[in-house]
Picture 1 (cartoon, one colour):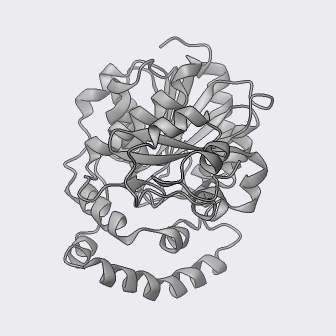
Picture 2: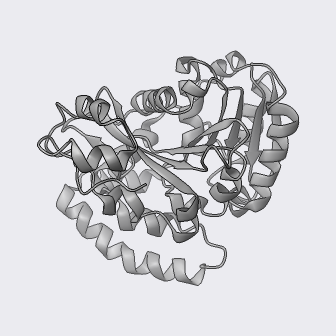
Length: 330
């Protein structure tokens, strides 16, 4: 389902409730005090950044209200298709649905999958001055889980890159906790170039927008050259990005002191940790360290980032869920 023509303070009841897949009265109550700037249009949330291969699998677009944000959740695979545990899928900082165009259809064929976007994504609606700290984004993950997969009782989490860090931070807030977790290319510290942070920090929103348009042609050229195997993340992010959010979240990750490894022994459910030893941005040593600290951690080296976004990865994940995750306790 696509979102309706628009959602705003003065136009809640009709199209918004139908397009969101929610009860009209509930939606009306949730949106009663929304700031005027929190508008959702079909072109923004419905299909603008969703590639064609994913559209047949996208069953619903859900608006998730948190105490200080409005967030998007895309549902792939309906109850008739998905027999396995429901999945909360938390993408990384620079991911868009396009980055997972090979993964989500295969996953959705056996698991109802909620692809959720935290507040740093372009789809979110924030009030002026709202924060983009790691704690805030982790709280988003917990609230997204509460309103999507938690009612099912049993579910798993698949989280990638910085999304994996957020999922680990959010674990203590998840109720019920996940039955299993898959961490794709996780970080201990986020590899944000100091030079990029220094260049972007003083830029005003108009300057950031100019930079975005300057970079788009070159990013599009690289994307077309790698069309057969490229992930498309950078170009797709630039094309649909909110430059202000990108800058603020980039500075947040640049200042992040690193994952508190003492949190990991508290996560007792089965965990599969996937590394890419040829990827400099996602050190395999960090993934192995996380796997070693988890009480029920299993380490797999997929060697490349493309493997971690492709059919082989999801086949490995589904097999592991069937043999280990589904049958194990929490």
